Length: 71
Image (cartoon, rainbow, N blue to C red; front, side):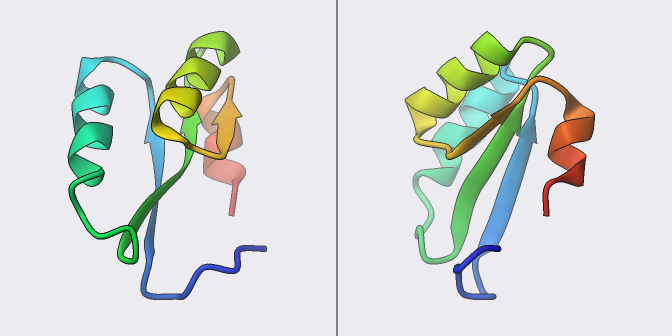
């Protein structure tokens, strides 16, 4: 269960390519009180975890289905 206020938009990112990197970088420019990346998924867990580490994302998944099932 998340303790985040309901006005925060929580993002889950599918894939860890260039577009996702640009998107995550752009989200850093927005107020953290309004936007937060909470999870990332890639076909390779190692790549997902590296992306999560780079952007301080708490969860990394090895499939898009796992991400979709995350509340």
